[in-house]
Structures are given as structure tokens and as C-alpha cells.
Amino acid sequence: MKHLRLIVQACFAALTNGYVRGFLEGKIYSGPLKQLCVPGLNCYSCPGALGACPIGALQAVLGSRGRKFSFYVLGFLLAVGAVCGRFVCGWLCPFGLFQELLHKIPFPRKIKKLPGDRILRGLKYLVLVVFVIVLPLTAVNLVGMGDPWFCKYICPSGMLFGGIPLSALDSGIRAAAGWLFAWKFLILAAVILLSLLVYRPFCRYLCPLGAIYGLFNPIALVRYEIDRDKCVDCGKCKAGCPMDIDLHREPNSRLCVRCGKCKKNCPTGAIVNPVLRAMHQNAAQGAKKE
Image 1: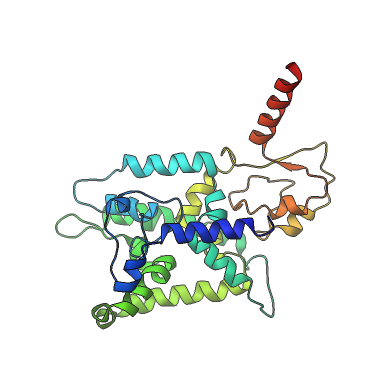
Image 2: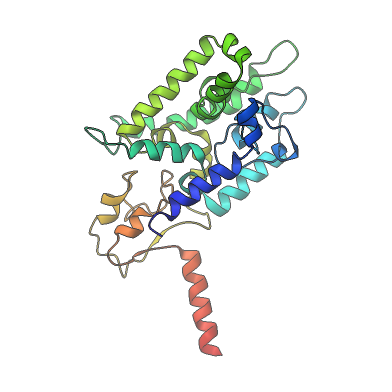
């Protein structure tokens, strides 16, 4: 159980990127599964990707000619957000796993957050509004089609799982690589360096998918609640939180990825899921009646 979350993350990453033929031949899977979204940030252009990234799918619709709204993608994001919130980020996102593994590498100094953290946290909402929604809708070409701005110009996950493997496997793509490839590689390199220093910097500051799911944290089925009768305000939950969240005051912070380290650190078991607690209470009451 100690490594349960890591095992789930690795298995889900392998499951959603399990098209082995794509890695062998340098081709992108285009079968029927590609029409379905996966919960995490998972690049459509990854040779092994079997599903679509919800952010990429949303931009594909917003930037297309004649279609400016996707009921499927919006419904998918609402459903996943309402059930899981940012649990997806902590347990199911391949790029989140990548950042976590990097953070485990020894580094002279680790810090909980970057200078200007409170302002930097707002960047992911700016990225969501400007690069995911507004620009694909408004910055269109002569035939009325817009670019997937976030995927094309920002997303380091796309570079890691799509751009680098495809360029390594396809000589034509290597020959065509230009300034955009260099720019995306620079963004990825910056995220890698920051991940050695800070826990999940892309999730914390830039990810538009995390921005969406974070809005659901206070109401999602997978959420936290502090049992005030048990809490002794010892501060161990915040000390153990890699995101530096004060669970005592903000148990459902929009930053929380539900890694569970706060619960492991709590000496009194005061951090609970209210939905599970209600189910246990109902089950106990039913048992007593019987």
C-alpha cells in the first residue's frame, strides 16, 4: 500500500499510452478509441496514445470551422470534475507522474513554492482563458480555422510524449523541426529543471486542465473534510503536504491533487472524505437495525 499511488499512476500511463506499434513505427494511433477523452493531460500526438487529451479535444472543436462548442468535451470535464476534482492530477495524469519522478531526484535544495507563488498560481487560469479558449476562437486563418494554441505553443507534455518520440522515429519530422520545436523543447527543459526544485511546477502554475478540475475540489465526491473533534491543530498536515497547503484551514484547496500525504501525516485521523464517512455511518446504522 505504501506505493499504491505510484503503481496506479504508472499503470494508467501505460494503459492510456499502450499502442506499442506507434512507438515501433513512429505512427500515431487513429482508431475509434482516439475519439474518446482520457481524464489527464495525455498528448494526442504521442505515438502510443490510445485516447484524446480533453484540452486538445476542446481546442480542436473551438478552432474548427463551423463548430464552436463541444457538448461531449464539456460534459466529460464536468462529469470527471464533479466526481474526482484534482484527484485526476494526483493519480491518473502521466505528466504529473513525470514531474513527481523528477522531484525524487536528489537536488542541493528543495523548496515548497517559487517566489511570487500567489501571483504565479493565477497563470494557469490565464492560460486556460487566453490560449485554450479565446485564441482558438478568434485568431483564425482565411478559411475560418484557428490553431490549438496551448498544444502548439505551450504544452510540455505534448513535447515530451509526442514531439520528441516522433522526431526520433521519423526522419521527415526531424528535417522539418524548426523554431517551434526549439521553443517547446525550451519550455520542457524549464519544467524539468523546476521539477527538481519544486513539486509539480507545471501542475501548480500552468496546467489549464488542473485549473478546471481544481474548481471542482470543494464539491467533488473525492474531497476532504476536517473532523474538528479529532483535529489538534498540530500543523503536521501542512508540513507533509508537497503543495504546501494548510489543510486545517483549506482542506479543498484548488491546488490539492489528493496525493494523500496529509492524511498519512495526521496523527489523529482528522482528515476524512465526507462521502465515505456518510456511507460508513449509514452502513453501521443499517447493521444496528438488523
